[in-house]
Amino acid sequence: MIIGATSAIAQEVARQYASPGCQLFLVARDESKLDIVKADLLSRGAGNVATACMDFSVASDFNTVLDNANAFLGSIDTVLIAYGTLPDQVACAESSDETLKALNLNLVSVISVLTVLGNYFEKQQSGTIAVISSVAGDRGRQSNYVYGAAKGGLSIFLQGLRNRLATKGVNVLTIKPGFVDTPMTKAFDKGPLWASPKTVAKSIVKAIEKNKDTLYVPWFWFWIMLIIKFIPEKIFKRMSL
Image (cartoon, rainbow, N blue to C red; front, top):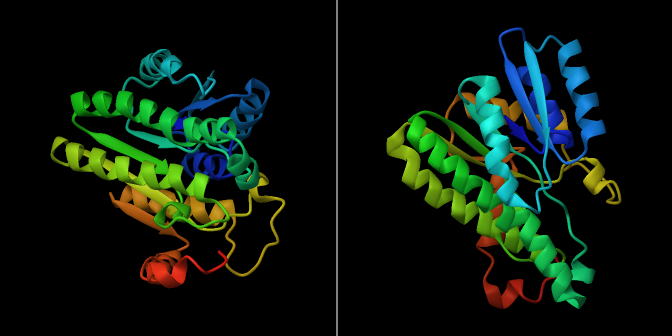
């Protein structure tokens, strides 16, 4: 099951799984885009693909979506949550409404979905929940601290969920990409630290197979963020990041 299936990274992950023995249940907001993704996966050899539309700002709708996914798949082995948006930090700084909208979509709605999934997998006693967070959540920076706060909160929630489900046969994977060249980041200048969605997707699939807890992708972001986290606050607060 892939939630946010029309995002660039999610599409590449789905392509990694597209094989005759794999059934995929795709969830996204845009039905026309979902149809395109579905057709692509079937052409690549996916065994069977079903779709469902959901407004992620209305997280209560997820119970029905999960019931439909479970009915189609029989049981759910793996869920990837890959939706979210990159808010305008300036707009958020000027408007509490914009800030709350960004936090609701990137944090609150994801936590709501995860709460339902946590109960589902705990009852099933097996499976993997993989969630795309971000390195932005490792330390607040003036350039994107609302987005960073959402992703930081999400990563902490996932730590607790992983701790809760670890003895239940369920693995929770926190995925922390660095810069990824997607439509969401099209306005940014690209450099050597940027990765393609396909590269990120391959790492995600491997991490799921190995039951990893946390994935920094590409790998060097672990070391970059380790350095950033250890910069003393008296110095860090004067830096332009």
